[in-house]
Length: 231
Image (cartoon, rainbow, N blue to C red; front, side, top):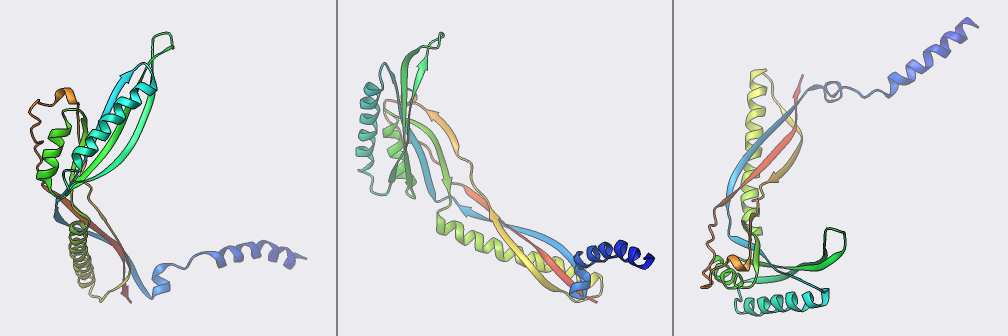
């Protein structure tokens, strides 16, 4: 009976030990070390993207729809004269304007239009023309997909080389060889949009082109992983 009771107390402990993970050092026959490295490469901002908007206030949504839709239609007609500029319709919002007592006293409507081009001169000229009747919500310069991909690949190669260099330093300091167990790679680098919120009333009558400075975006590749130093 005493032996049976001892087994009842011992079995749960044995079951718990059996389910515990084996330490990495024991499983790999060596010492595991976590490492991280990063590298960056500049990517030319060779693509411009802008958001313009038409906005109006009035007594009824129907009245606003005619005015705002007319402004957007005129903008699209103007944009069609620039074959290097791509256009895309954006969001349209209609919302009530309330008086102090909570009663609706009017309506506001806004409709967005996105413009994108690698030809910054053409986009700058087009924005200048559109500002006579529309506002500019934001303008952002960013690398084109192929430009970004090239910078990402270069940064990734540099980051992997940096990871291997750090692994070598550690291994040599301990007088051992090393092998890479696993790697994880990701990249980052997004240019923030430049908020402009310039309304048509703020635009000059001459419809001067909007100044655009390309600049660069720093693309960073991050490498993290684990190396094993054999015993």
